[in-house]
Image 1 (tube, helix red, strand yellow):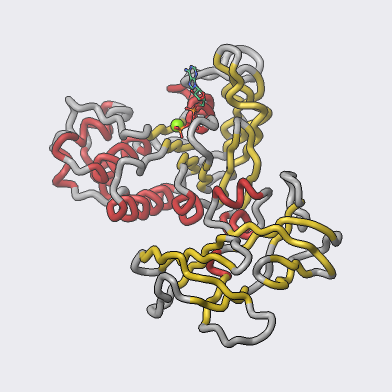
Image 2 (tube, rainbow, N blue to C red):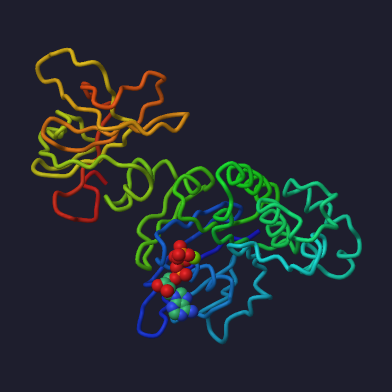
Length: 355
Ligand SMILES: Nc1ncnc2c1ncn2[C@@H]1O[C@H](COP(=O)(O)OP(=O)(O)OP(=O)(O)O)[C@@H](O)[C@H]1O
Ligand SMILES: [Mg+2]
């Protein structure tokens, strides 16, 4: 296994810049999720790392070895020691499962079924599937075979481009867990592209957020969710309640009352971020200073629910409740805030004030 280091990588197609100076370090044996909206350059970045395309400038190193952008020509894709799992699995339809997995192996290992069996076990598939054709497998099974094929030559780095996007919710969860376990067992260094924030937060050691060809934040999942770099990142990695506020003495006065704010900052106008799970609802007690809201609707998800609220001043906010006792649409409720808010500049600035 090796680390991956991308330095000042740029790439454009024609006159359109796609990557604008990306720096990314993935420590050996860890998984980094690459998260970003459609068209921001995620696949382009993976293709440059894999060697399917050349950067305009900047370098890619696997371990200490510069494979792209160094002196001379880049190392060809097949000699980079990188496994690639494309979005649709990309299995060879005319080969069996065993044929697909063994494709990149030396003939000796391909003949000896032991390595194929070990790889099937690694990705949690029954060895009876070895003789099947790809079209006889479910989508999740195909994804796992594609992963086994990528892991077969023991690559130092595995790149996965939205490997779960074609799966339904239940299969996605199960395949995600199996793939994470297989990568872990193989001790692989991995980069997983996704635009699913829950997938990124739950699977990765670190999350890289790419926007307009730039890396805007690189940190562990909890830090990303709790202290996003800016409000765009905040809303991209989860549901957000964003309110205009006036900061004074470590607290924010906003439509939800006076809420403590984390860390040092100046007084004055700001915007504050809360997460919907920080909002608590109760029956109105007719107390002074109580923040009242009307329930506009309830989206029930089973394990929890999203409550759409309109505050007395007309502000729309969202609460997340795990409770079995959900308010009815049209009900009047009192809203309190748990924990503290994160403050950002009042204008459309980029840095968190509390950073
Ligand atoms: N070969 C190409 N020629 C011209 N433009 C390209 C080429 N490949 C990608 N692009 C453009 O580069 C931009 C980034 O594409 P890329 O495939 O990296 O996005 P992405 O982040 O993977 O998006 P998605 O989430 O939709 O897969 C897009 O605007 C795309 O149209
Ligand atoms: Mg893509």
